[in-house]
Image (cartoon, rainbow, N blue to C red):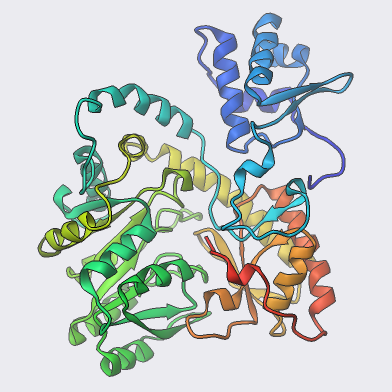
Length: 483
């Protein structure tokens, strides 16, 4: 646990969070609302719930309603009673159910004390569980068929196409291919459009899992730097002229890991460079929906170059457990992509596609996600400023992480020492396409504010140890998948 003494949540706070819960019957509706609050993190783990009497008064319901709701929580594993202390929140399987060792390296510390900042992905926003319940009711209509939809459920294709149209990019549903995540989409594009003799231009720093997916076809990568202040378009143009790559993979919206946003003017210039060399842009929009300051985002890159292939994802804007992404491609590329898709799999799960179709029908769920991420971002940046004042960073206006520049090239050593203190972070070299970047570390704001505050305290202690000393051996964090 991050805190040494139990935290509590007031009855008034619970009443505000559960809102107008279902009341047929009321105890079941209250239990369902509390289960979702605990599951998605709005009420943390190991938190003391209000007494039955206090919650009864705050909600204006009978004492029996609250008593039975708490009993349902305990029976389902979402709460536990401690004699003389009260009722505390739990989740079935404990805290460790949230971690997979392919993403989070072993630290030798109890899971309850681990703060995972390796994974830039948030927990599911409010409304996700309801979408699953509604999708489950719709699923029987599909059980009489074979269940294979290589391009995606038509309803989901239409919902994704409508999203692009709302952003000023007219899109037909048949331009959309639904995949099992954005990484699967990147691998599919590489498989369909490149081979061992081809070259792909990539940014550096860059999201490492995407470049790994791209190289599954045997294509060779050519990095071009992204500076802390933005894209060097002259360097991009020179690299394109020299290499003549088949594809260029870029993240213009809250670039991972820097958080930068490419302006509309820069998109137009970049697109002109690509047209000159015949290079097709593969644009990753996984973070595009996560603008946190209410700003208007630049137009989609494909509005400047219709040949662009755009990758989308539900993992960052909604929830990683959905495991759904998509490709938006020009009409003349769709058949080629679909043929390549059949060599990999026969489509994404129907249930998850039904869920995402419902989630995309409204902006309410994503807006709740933005509200939570905005609070967490502000808490993280304040904690870095307080505990690590020597570190430099550009305040991100969206996305999921801040790219911190250290006073010295100690990023790998810092990550190694931080692991020993129960904080998992990804150092700069994990994002370097061809080495370097040890002056940087990426810190996501994907955890609740209290954990982010504690993580920065631990990072400050780790920094005090490594700032002047020799560099440590490469940390385990740099050798695992960075999400």
